[in-house]
Image 1 (cartoon, rainbow, N blue to C red):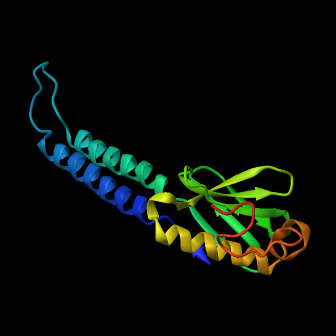
Image 2: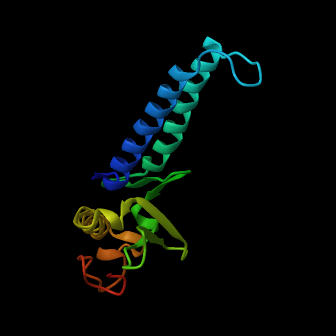
Length: 163
């Protein structure tokens, strides 16, 4: 399973392209003398284009999140930082109605955000949560029992952590 946010990626891509175009257009308009007596040089134009590219890349970091899960465990890459977790430390996959993204509840009662699964992606996000829950159930989870705890079914929409 490999999931990346959809809606945010589209918005960030459009915004980054728009910013770059604005800065590149501005760079072509930087010619001649300024009111203060300064002169725009080719270096000023190049700097504007580079600045637009850097701002565009900065915007694209918001689209960086990704979650990959397989039989070995789950690898989470958020905007800043990431985690590689084996299934035996994951207790539950949570996706509350009020949360902007999913999260993993760990055996030590810590919680890890999964920013790749965002509420704005609606059904795509729900499918991703269901797939994570199936993998968790298949690989035992934090307690070594199916679904991560004795008696849990591990099925989406069931158990104490279903949302």
